[in-house]
Amino acid sequence: MDLHEAMDIINHTIQDVSFHFRRVPGSSIILRYVKNSYQNDPVRSVVELCLFLFAVRYLLAPRYSTKQKAVDLTEHEIDELVEDWTPEPLVAAPTELETFEEERRPVISGAAGPKVKLANNGRTVTNMASFNYFNLISNDLIKERAVQILRSYGVGACGPPNFYGTQDVHLDTEREIARFLGFPACIVYAQAFSTISSVIPAFSKRGDIIVADRAANFAIQKGLQISRSTVKWYNHNDMADLERVLKEVDKEQRRKPLTRRFIVTEGLFETTGDMADLPTIVALKNKYKYRLILDETHSFGLLGRTGRGLTEHQNVDPSNVEMLIGSMAHTLCAGGGFCCGTLEVVEHQRISSSAYVFSAAIPAMLSVAAAEALKIIEGNPDMLAMLREHTMVLRAQLGRSEYIHMSSSPENPRVLFGIKRDVIDDRCVKDEERLLADIVEECMAGGVMISRVKKVNDSSKAWQYGGEMCMVTVSVGHTRKEVEAAGSVIRKAVGKVLGRLKK
Image (tube, rainbow, N blue to C red):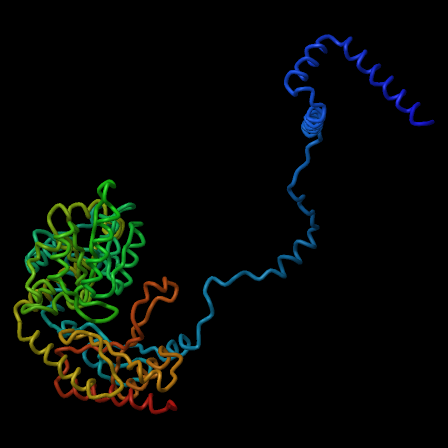
């Protein structure tokens, strides 16, 4: 077949198709539409026809699943897989340091007084690791009152305060603390740690703003986390940086709906031992319209002329503090915590603070013991003078060491010290925690019990402020000579441990 014959066949076929197509009803309308729409462009018509046919083919194609089919296993295969599977442990294996400290953990036999007997080996050592600042553990009056209340009220309240757990002695303790600190009202909690971690979320919610010191203790951190508020951090005790953050927040929140705003700080910081600049903080919070939450867990009963805390020590009117939180488990040697404020602030917590609403009320015995301890501190200002004298004696002994750096304020009887950074670098110390653990162990061998400040390992690294520290506390139950001797033991222990390290 030549080319001419092929062209004849193609033309004849096209004419045939055209003839039969024209016989189809409506075909003339389709042809007219194509000619008018596409200006007799056959290529475009062919492309569009192909796309139409593809769409029809796609819609009519059989459906299939992209999910992988489950593999059918026999019972034997399932048993083998189960035997081979090793679950991830709930708790990581203890580290070498944790094992070291656990094996040497001191166990006290009897009261945790200025001198304690160890159940581990029967030795008697000087206790400089407790918050028994005024030796109230050994106070006979408090013991007698506690026994009386125990016989009258029983061991515990056995119910939350709002469900028949409130007893008259709880209200007496609240009134006594409010009177002592100069606040209109007070509320008592069953546990010190849960006090501020419940107070913060009781007032600050999602969308509210909290400006907090970077060195805030772990209880404050948990309260901030639970509140789900927007948290802004300022550098530790840096008032210029605090004002910078307040200005930034003020600029960011312009033309936005009003929110509640709080500044959260401590009196004496748990992680560093130094003191907040309360007058400047109050001035800034008034200038930028914030509310102040002040945690005086470690300063209540210790600072000020009569032990009323940071407000008295720095001559700040308590009315400038919206919420003042403190502990009855530290200076008062009892248990629980408290929050002072206006009547509205206190009553709101009775229905909105989770630790108060859902926890059993503090045992009446501990509540009365705290109230009695407060009266003793208030009526014996000489104890405060003696405590400060002992603090100065201890700091003088530790200050004689060329290796020790103390971060705590001179007024703080809870002395925090670490090893100077140049000493650490000079001796190429890689594990500061183990170094301090060795110092604690060496002090124990010398008859003095101190403690290493520990951090929660699974918390955010941003919350683990400051370096590694040891903690030493003094008590009026110690004599001046005992404090001097203990300070000398600690100083020599530091030198001895560092002497083992090569430069």
